[in-house]
Image (cartoon, rainbow, N blue to C red; front, top):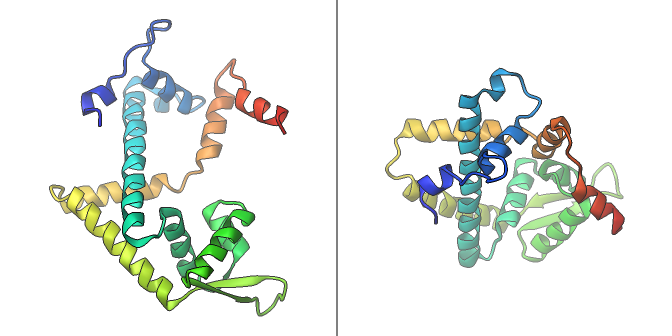
Length: 206
């Protein structure tokens, strides 16, 4: 893994004299208030972007390691957690909570059902719909996976004090309340002279 200095100090772009991180940070906060785009704040946001990307690498690595031990993928674990939080819920509600297409969740639920982790039954008020609940085996699986994730993170943060952990947890929870796609779209719209080549390309191939 690259050291911290190489991550926080990307090489400048020869054409513009600005580093890729500076450019990315400006793009993310484009259209924000003047205070939000101050140089000091941009530097902090750029560092935060790198930290979030590194955190994503860590969580993916944890998910892969847990999957090898339990056979439960990270996405399946998150789905089980969502179902447990809203027990006896419709598949459409699960999809909305996870911000995924209903067809994707339907396939995932079918897979979890085959493993005996969830059960499906007709909705009491709408025979066309199904409600999904976590089984006893599903709850045991959630508990086992939660313990593995918790103990792994505890080992990784063994040198941190409780206040640092509380601050990080609060910040990540707060960041998680935002909608990434909306934020990126707003930043892109506020950046002059940009075009959505990805969208136009994808539409042309439909």
